[in-house]
Image (cartoon, rainbow, N blue to C red; front, side):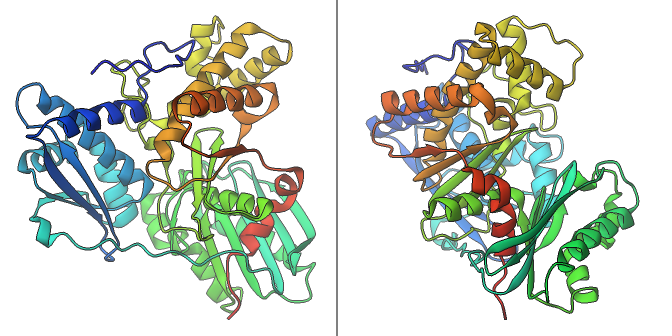
Length: 460
């Protein structure tokens, strides 16, 4: 299909926005009386189920490739947005066979098959053909975490370069500290355990008692258990399963007298901090840093039990889109909304950074932007156009009133350029979307994450 966005990213003229491609496909399917419906359920072993339905073209000739692209890209998005390891397909056996041939060992989506299936949910992704009647009802629920400010609490955030921790009394921060650590390549699990406990003890020393502990960390965290995390990349999988996976529950039981203790992904806490700071909900937080991180607070103010790993969610359907070195997939968010995006676009803008680490490239581009360098402006304008179309794409999967924008790429003059171009795209192409792009205020930047983390557990 020939997709022509009204606004073309200056350094990426071949960009094919996922939202426009899907709209064009759906219009084509709606106009064909021979189109048919396919229904998909994405489920987990615990009974959680997400449903999706769409119309496909007659599965013949040139339509086959279009149908496969449409369904596979949406399934890929849903896998990383909501999570699940069993894909049930009703209404088209050929589509089920296609998904099964890709999400398997040796298939082009082997990374997702293994990572989501084995590492996160304990068994590889499986695709099954079923009848519509056999599809389970949608069931996801919400985690009623956050906005609990009563009592004496500790809030912490574990990052790649430091551990942030704060003591909070009835919603007010009475102490906060950042402790430098180097977790990435530490092989001994005890290094991580001792570091976390050290930060908690430092904060506890400033409280008359500790009623609850809440925290955030990079990685996939389900029921306060770490399924995978870049922070523990140096630790063997055996040690993660044996000790670090349940480190927070172990500390709760052995060191903190079983007081309420909840930990979630750092993106979720960022979104919650933004929601609390702006006193509104329906917040999607997107952080452009080392990669793309995201978190979501629904219209009722709840954190959902979703993955929200939008770094792996497709946003560009171009056959010449960037290829993610980890998943080997094309056009996913990490290559468009992170310091990787800056590094990918820098040569096109005329910068020569060959061999320079990505963080240093970002600093160079930010310095050039501060001096008014047009090459740097083009990089940020391109990211902004990408982002505008991606926000519209995200809005098809999330109920969004507020888009919280943050991260290292968002800082400085370049961040405002990204916002301006994204808003231009939304005004021009999607005027029906009423989404406010926001950046955290200074109070939220200083203490919002700690307060939000501390507020996660309810007191028993």
